[in-house]
Image (cartoon, rainbow, N blue to C red; front, side, top):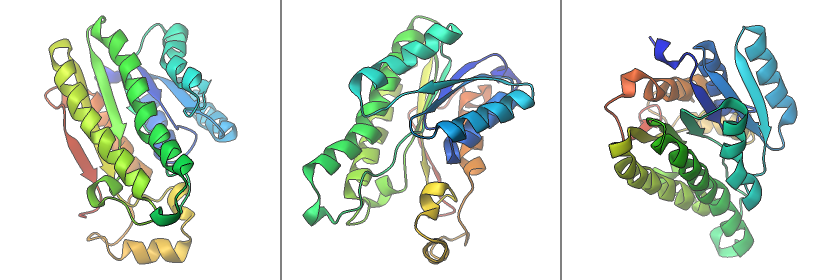
Length: 249
């Protein structure tokens, strides 16, 4: 079904665990060369690379702190230098920095969350866009959150704001990319059973799951499979869209 992904050069950010790790594995299984970005999760990233290589796939590790401007601005260039190009960017890395009530929120937490979840993916998308524009096009998939739909809670307001901004960036880049065959879309996951959500505690996760129409959390593969579809020729006429993987929410 996804045979056209063989040989494609794919950079997945935040690929040491959860959705990013699953996405990297799926692309590798389809024959893509996968860049596995990580920051603090080097052990997990090496595990993902080992699993890919044991299945006969190709991958490489790329470490970068996306809160550090020189590192995030150079990440796509480093990937291109090592692989010869970039066909697909999966902007997955992100998360809230701090869980303070917004009335007590330090400005540094606000700025850091926006930097990681909005500024960094924009910078990476822009650098990928530069290369794709002159090389026949490509695909960019930005991973948002259901927090963009609801605005986040009183303790995740900056995260919801950043992800809402990222969805706006998607629409703007999609219009700019259309003449160059650069297709840009967003995936908006809901409650997904990842290490980040498990930090809520099993009981809290189960209680949250009861509010979902399907009655259970999603899996990383639910999101990764949609990444695969949007990057494949199945997504040739899809751009500027936001897709919810939320179990009906």
